[in-house]
Length: 395
Image (cartoon, rainbow, N blue to C red; front, top):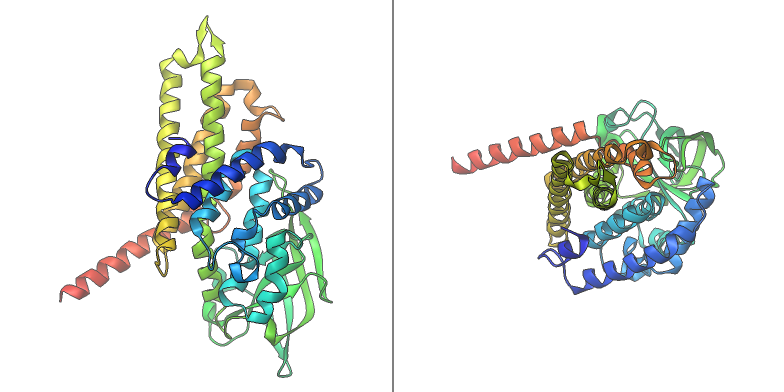
């Protein structure tokens, strides 16, 4: 099932189809022209190009220059799938504009929304989301960074954040810190911090197998107004989870885009590559690999867009649906891409060949925004919780 066939299904309306058509055409015509060598320059160029073309508008509300009154998750997913198909860094650039300001959209004051959202939607500012720490990744409750009161109007931030996307190039970050209202996750709060705030520095740039701008941030007595808080005191975990509840499905969509591209390339390879005097696709083992990949792609599309459709149709949370979409789509994409690499043989591990690039791009998606192992725990816990609720309702 191609993207066009997916779009003909019941999860979408004509507005989604029009957006997908326009973005697909623009991506095919423009992304290959953008710089690729320097990762910071490449990311800035993609944010700027997407903003100028109007394709960052879905990441902010209509009131502040965006497309919709509130997030339309299907549009966010379509954008990430299409951009992922063509260019992993373009997908990253789009995703971080949304994730890096999603908490502002959901919990920010009108003043904060007015200050930050329009520039993000126009591609004139780059956003970051600073949650992870050296000793607090999946275990958010272990967060050590602090936000201590400085009088009644300010707080001072101290600590480190690591694996921060857009670290070093972002203009501002959503930052989570311990404010101490309660133990564990209930004692966290979220704040907006400008990248040029005194005391905020880039301690380390992190290089990964698929080049993206990542860094460790150091906060040394960084003084910010209490008015920069997103949500109430002690609501940081709630802010983070509500934001990820929207954007987790989009990670699955990005993986779907990678998988569709790998499937396209391996199908073309099977049809055109001659082996022992016949097309590679004539071999039953090749046909089996293609069939498995087609099923992986189609099942991922159904889970991703079911989750997005459910959220868009008023579900307060899609915890289980988003976890299933993210887990299945990223794991399935890894399988599809691995089969593609195998089918390409030596070319599959040659730098500059698309499936080699995809092989490096997909790996991180199985980790960030909740590793596969975490998603399994979430899915199982939701099922047990629902069972207990159903049983209690029958008494």
